[in-house]
Image 1: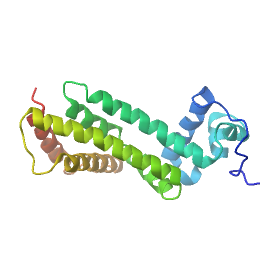
Image 2: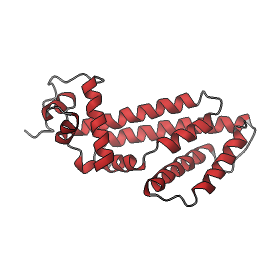
Image 3: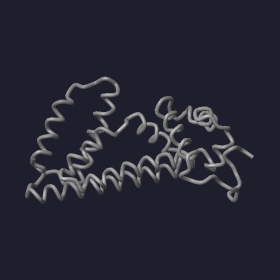
Image 4: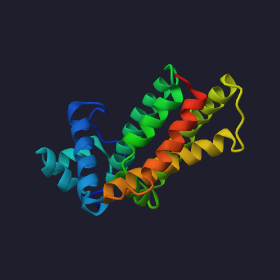
Length: 197
């Protein structure tokens, strides 16, 4: 029997336990530092100092671990976005979350994995749709509060903001900054117009 082919009725370790989180933390570090090709149960076990078989006590397969890793991370981001909508300047806070918590390397790795792991693809779609809905609602509310109109509808503005945040993150990680100050000035001007003060 292959390592990822395990009996579905076997006893599993408790989700949310210290070991469970340690394995997800270790996996995320490996993914960030070495890429998805290095992400194996052996590397995770070595990273956190446990026996390899313990990884399969908490996760049935490596695919399950990867899906849970993304799910945990995306839930944290969704929680931050939802909390931002209750602030005095929700769009400004949502922008800060997007531009400062977007890690282009991790996103690239997750996207590569999502092309072959169906459960991860479903989680990525769910996250994009939920985060976009939060952003669209915040943009629409800000435009309505200030009686402003935009040639670009709120869903388009949300896509533009997310795309720009990712592009800025990707380029900054490479050491590219040309044009960043100019686009940030445009974004700050828009934010000031819909969230004065």
